[in-house]
Length: 296
Ligand code: NAP
Image 1 (tube, protein in one colour):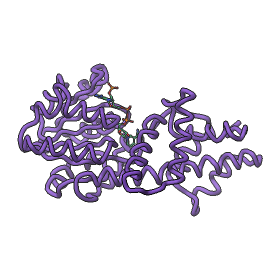
Image 2 (cartoon, helix red, strand yellow):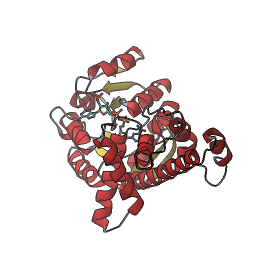
Image 3 (tube, rainbow, N blue to C red):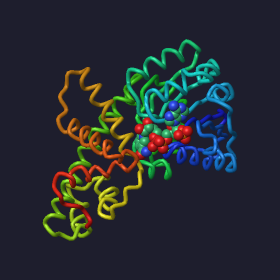
Image 4 (spheres, rainbow, N blue to C red):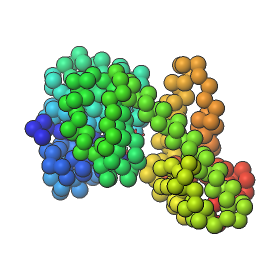
């Protein structure tokens, strides 16, 4: 508990993670681009920094959870970024889902300043961040992993060192392939049940404990039935993750049929102005094609 911890990015995920750090008694400094989002955490005992550079100059372990690759680059490499303030011997842990290649490049720049970096993307949604039950897939050196572990345990339940720098991001992309293809199956299943005149809640209860059960079915199925599109994870961010998957697959020369299809369905929903809805609004793309609406 002696290391001073800084958290950058108090979005849907960062808020829950920061709250769990405070609950576990860690000393936490925070920075968020929109300053008003820091207020509730300052009231809860955190200290607000003036910039990522200011935070990095005053913390030993710097945690980041922002949106996309350019955003992590802005926070680390930009004006008043982490790189401008980081102390030699510090550890930067990036929880954002971003390009595996960009991660390696930023880690190299931090290394020149004597700081280590781990890529540590997370899975488990806003619920996992709030409950402290996230899965965290970590890429980087073993020494950095061991050092980060007591911090990550504040909000992570399954914390796995999966390989060298960039491997955490690659495993997260595997995770996203599994998530969206499962999600597509949940959408098709519920649409079929609706078209067949079944009671959707009874259908869900009947199948969720068997071989067809999944986190997606249990958590997002009821939301689809209730037509509750509030985001745990937005269409915009999921589409971003699939772009990262397809870019990496392209570099590997690998065809990914189902993932490519879901990517295009999200594009269509974004074009309809639905990018800020929860990613389970994927079902709306199928509804548009079939004229059947789930839960109606
Ligand atoms: P979010 O609610 O949209 O929050 C994004 C955060 O990043 C906000 O604090 C935002 O600051 C900050 N930010 C964005 N661009 C920035 C920039 N250029 N400079 C500085 N700060 C910037 O997103 P989220 O759902 O927490 O997701 C964060 C990351 O976790 C993403 O990489 C996402 O893919 C990943 N993730 C999310 C989930 C999930 O279920 N939500 C699950 C697993 C992984 P402002 O407050 O100023 O906008």
